[in-house]
Length: 381
Image (cartoon, rainbow, N blue to C red; front, side):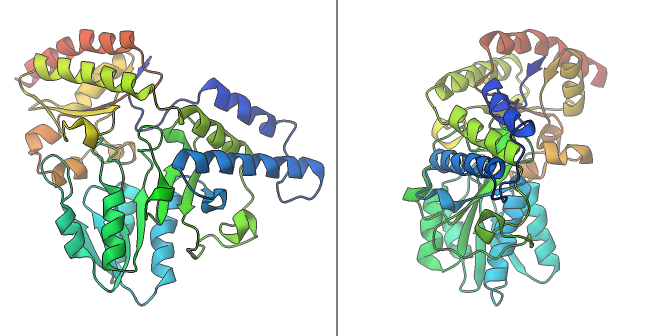
């Protein structure tokens, strides 16, 4: 199998699996228990908290709160910000957010909140002037992703944080789920208040995430019960998953290999755009404003789902967009927001590489893709 859908999920690397195994076996204690086996679990959690804090460039380990994943972290950040300041009924976000943010904001809009939807241009970029004009005295939270999961476009969240703080006392939340492990993050030198991550996007286990809550911010809990996570998030911690997340954080903290990933992505992208005159890139070409691993390409007047199925038959895994939206069989809301025409959106394929991707795997894709595309276009007439 050749796996090029790493923005959907990533394989657990051996060192992560090895770190998790003891906490599924002999070291099974509840970290809230006072006896030694429980305290062993507690120490493992705190060690992982330090690793995740280091990965994000947080100033204090206590700013990291473990959750069940990116969706919970996104939901908590936005709902907590709203609960924190109930008289403020305005939310700012973008048209291209992940469903965990976009659908929540749509729900809040249905409940009477005023939501300002920031637009993007044809390359997927935000206009900072638009951000500045959107913020009001009654804005409770501004939520902008760091890296788009479909196109790989990076948003200037550090600059946006400065605008938010200059214009208001709203909280600024960043969905960083698809940025971690692919670009450097330094939260301590930013004014970002809340930052969501998910372990399975950077070679950790599914079902483990975290929300960075900047020191000094009181964010109301949305999960009520015991006093776990310094009374910020109730529920017995999933120790093995948290340990796996910490180990994954250590694995991706080294960034020198990202240049190789970018080179492989460029090799694949250049081949496709040169080989198919009806293929076009969705998103920016600027290497400083995109993830190094992601390439979203449209094959005009070609069925993207059929390309996916044919590649799957050949043992190659890719995506037509967000895995969380794939069951709808509709044009991507992200590409629609970029004003990509329907003839292209329905033929879009996302290739997303990882540190584990090899050169021969990219070459195998470029060898088989021309026949698949030619056959499908022949069938389509």
